[in-house]
Image (cartoon, rainbow over all chains, first blue to last red; front, side, top):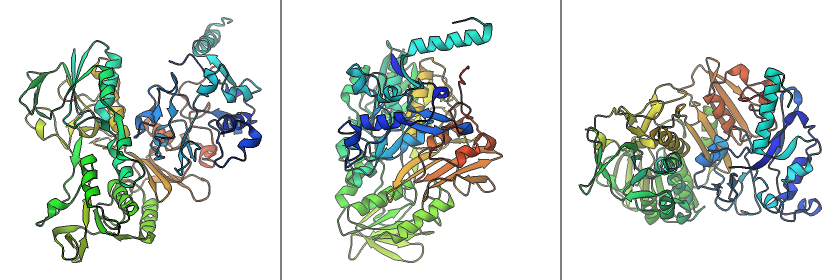
Length: 177
Length: 421
C-alpha cells in the first residue's frame, strides 16, 4: 500500500511542462539536462501535460492502480510490483513492446520509446516509476520538485483523503476544515 | 474451505494469488498436468521469432505457488462429480472441493485437412508446439501457414525471422479479417504481399497433406494448386477443453457457460479463461475471447467471487495488440466489417501516418482500432465498458488524440470521481 504518492491538482496546473523536462532528466543516464539531451537514446518524460476541455492543461501520469489493468495484460510479467512497494514499474529487460498494456490502461499513461536499459528493442513501455530511487534516497519525485504551482505534490495518501473528506463536509454541511 | 483450481496458466495462476489474498487461511489445491514453471503462452511467437529466449517466457515458478501455499497436483483432471463435489484425476485419485475453478483452457482447433500426412501439420499453442516447429525450421526452407488470424500472422512473422519463405494460406479474402477493419486488413495484406519471402493466398484453403517430392510435405489447395513445403503449421483458433465435463451436468456450449459473476450452473463452480463462455460486452451473447488479458482478469474476478467477495464481471471484450512490420496494431471490441456493417465510424485526426478509428452502433461505442496511433486504445476499451456514446467523445479529443487529456480527466466523460471544488 502506498503511503506517499504524487497528488495531482489539475486546477493549479498552468501547463509550463517543467515536470516533463525534469522527469525526462531524472530518467536519463547522466541525470543532468545539459548532457541528457546529447545522450544516444533520449530519455522521455513519464508525465504528460494533456490538453483538456476548454484547452486547460491536465498533468497526466500513472496512478499505480491496484489491481492494475496494465499488469494483468502484460504477457511477459514485465510490469512488476516487487521493485518498490505500491508502485507498478516496467522492467525494460522483460518488456517486449507488444502494446498489451496500452490496450488495457484507461488513462493513456503508457507510451513506447527506445529505452537505455533495453537498447536492442525498437520500443518498450515507458511509464511513471514513482521515482522510487529518488524517494528511497529521501528525495521527492522529479515532477514534484519541478512544479512551482502546487499542481503536483508528494503527500501522504491518508492525509490527502482526509482533505477530501473535509472538503465534502464543507460542501455538504458548511463545516470548516 | 478448500478451493480447487483446475489449470494453472493465465487465469488459474491469477486466481490462486487472489484466493490467497481474499482468504489467507484457506486450503488451495492447483491441478495441472503441465510441468512447472508456468509460462506465458502468447510469448511462443516472440520466442519463435528469436526475440526472446524460451526460458524468458516463465511467469510463475515453483516458488510462486509455494509462497501462496498452493498444493499442486501435477495430473490431468478427467472427471467432475458435481453432486459429491469431487474432481477425478487421471491416476484415479479424487479431490474434494468446496469451491472449484475451471481454468483448464483450450487446445488448438483442428486444421481441417485430410490426407496421409495430415498429422504432420503443427499447431502453435504452447511450448511443445514451439519445440515441434523449431525442430522443423530450416533456414532457406519453405513453410506453409494455415490461417490468417493473429496466430497465423505471428507464425508467419516468426518463420520469416528464422529465414524461411512462407506461404500464408487464408480462407477469407484478407488476413486478420476477424480482428481488424477493412483499412487495416488491406494495409496488412499489402505489406504481406510486398514482404520478401511471403506468398499470400487469400480465399484459399488446404484440402490434403501428402508426401512431397522435393520437400517433405505436399499440400493440395482448393484452387487445384500444389505446394511443396518443409513445414506446415496451423493457427485456426482454439477449442475449449470441455470434453471431460460432458457428463458433469454443467451448462456447456462451445465452452463452460458462466454468468456475470463467472459462476457456472452450479453455485460452487466457477469458470475463467479460455474455457469460460461468458456474456460479451459488445455482442451481448456468451462468447469466448481467448486472449491473455481477458483470462487474467477473469481469474481475478472468479477468485474474488469464490472467496465470497462479490465482484461483478462486466463482460468479456475482444482485444489484441501485436507488432506488425514494425508498426503497433491494437484493436478492441468489434471492428470487423462483418459485425460492424451499418455502424457509424469516426476517424480521429492522429499524427501523420497513424490511423485510429472508433466504431459506434446506435450511438454507443462498440470498438476501436489503431495502427501506429497514439496508444490510447485502453482508454477506449474502458469507454466501451462504461457504455460511452458518441457525444461523450468530445471533438477536442478526436482532433488531438496525441495530446488530448484522457477522458478520465476532470470534465471528461469517464470522470468517475469528480473533485469537489
